[in-house]
Length: 248
Image 1 (cartoon, one colour):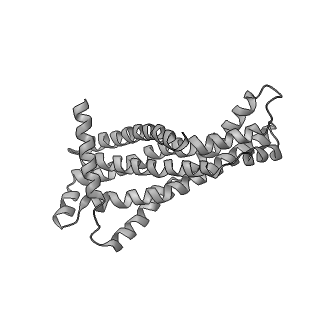
Image 2 (cartoon, helix red, strand yellow):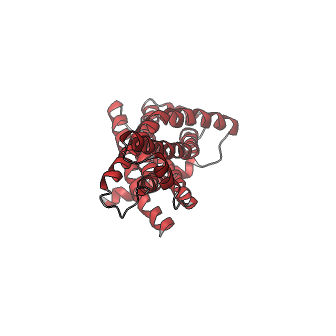
Image 3 (cartoon, rainbow, N blue to C red):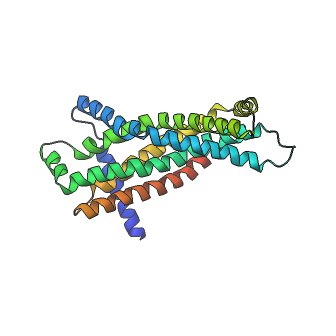
């Protein structure tokens, strides 16, 4: 097991070395990055907004029902909702959701190209297939995912505000006061650092499994599953590491 793990780490490292080689023609890669931003980022706006809004509402309601003493001010509901969303929910949980959506797409797309010998054809005409296929996807996600996460934070806080108003658990002014209380801009920086790292992990690990797919349609499906599972594990592990480094 350890031997297999080290093998994959070594092969992944060598692949990343190929991915970040100088592109043959930069203008082509700029166009591909814009296409991937649309495919991997903008296509995920709907699900991110939907999940974030409802999770923000749930956080607000749960916090309101857990305050059973007058010693805790009601504005704590807004404060805790904001902190939960900014520090953990948006950068980590949304990244896990994107690992399932984006990671499976990347792994299956590249895996299909491998089993249909399209990657071999790209290599024959003198183009580095690792850079051509994976690099634009990595750059696209690193650029667009922070925007998605900021949108997620806004939608989650808005969802909590709407839940507080419609359920009558907390007034608008008290909730907004809690949102503003004890705000530190470093929390946003911390969340965006995690987001960028998670974006890289999602695409690079999914791309790795797709790139080394062998066989047919069943193997493409297996590679897609492995890409999602392994990128999700990596996100959880690096979440702990980055939390210790940035917040300790």
